[in-house]
Image (tube, rainbow, N blue to C red):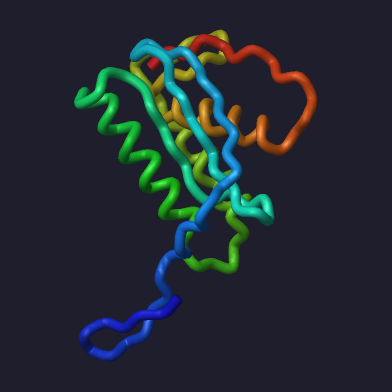
Length: 141
């Protein structure tokens, strides 16, 4: 899909949302309560959209979850020579390395972005494998 700026320069818009997406869902515990991530994939199996829900509606944590989901979705939908799967991997790597004040030695998430990455990664694994899933670790943020 193409559009143009007021000065006449052309640009490509983000991908339009398909009428239906296959989604996988994962829930992980955090200090904010349960964090639920849903990863929507196109018919071809490419990651297309991220949904996050957790914490009390209207809370700061809830609005951050919404912001993470919107930015991740936008990144997945932008025109690029990099595949959506590779972009999702980059998103997860970037978020999982954000340090937090409650980092732990047992591998649990130490920040809110790391918890988001863990939840999305678990949803991604669930959508690409058919084997039994391991129970997620308790995440702290």
